[in-house]
Length: 429
Ligand code: ACO
Image (cartoon, rainbow, N blue to C red; front, side, top):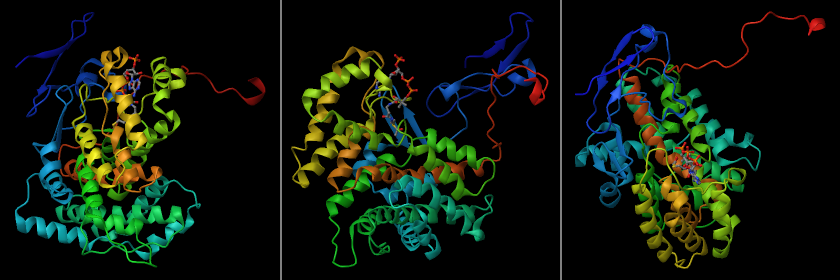
């Protein structure tokens, strides 16, 4: 294996950098001793070359456009598995046997209710609060409800937290939706599967029967599988950083929800639909692309580009195919936004600006079109993402707190502020 060291050419001082090799992917150079031995920091804003941990949950090969959960290619899981089975896999590391899956599924179904006091919290939000704002607040508030399982070092406590969090996030999300529309909350129905239950909590009303469309439930299930984890993305890293302090795990998940909300991350699905609305028609695509390429007022092609993928995001390929099937089922084959999105993609993939920068559609370019076809409003797109990603957040949090080598996450900085100076009394400033 190659040897790496850091040499101060002036003093000749050399620090050997131990190398960490994973199962796949580039080596990691351990720079942890550099400051102690040479008095310098390493500098990597945006963490483009920096690993923050060891993890065995997911693997991305950005050049090949590959995503694995616990070694299994995501396209195989999207075709053959279910969200609940994938959640089990991500949490436990192996695919379940039949009885293991049944036990897990039963436990998730039995934890779907939320405390009535928590439900009342929604009344405190202004009528037009963004559902992500409600999610941040209400999930954070879960930390005030479960004092029985706060020992992060106890595997049973971690398991109960994981099951509660995964089971309750659809109920909380549906409640945020109902609050936004001023409709009564609908209780979970535990005979329904995960996605059917979410749909009925969102779309049922007490005044008439509601039947879940199995195609809609299946479409959500596939989207959730594709969004379930993505290794050290911004929101997962946020959950890990918050969790590294030993804080309450529900509060750590709330911090992940806040990070997911941004348009550079999970908020991109909402931003894509707003962008398509703004472009309006296919004729406006070219002038819009010119604005993007000229970087006019920071205009970006939302749903394009990714820090890690320098090839097609494998999830985008699956979602695009899926999108056609869902639109067909709902009689929306000629959806104008789908046509617009495909035209944007076609133009971008032929354009040197995008080719040179290796910008391809990411997971969020087409997901919003599916959500829209299911009748889900635009401001609920990112909460949908949050439901799925909760599995990844919980698994990463558990992996981190059960790792004895975990230390508090505490980056350093290059200070560029004023140098030391004396306080001036007011009359001398
Ligand atoms: N449209 C136009 N240009 C882009 C785009 C885009 N969507 N994305 C990147 N670029 C350009 C940048 O302007 C930059 O160009 P330059 O070299 O001339 O300065 C170059 O490509 C590299 O971009 P960075 O911003 O340095 O890439 P980074 O890895 O930091 O950002 C990100 C990745 C945030 C995803 C970015 O591609 C982006 O803003 N995309 C749009 C938002 C989006 O879809 N986010 C969802 C990502 S997937 C997810 O989180 C679920």
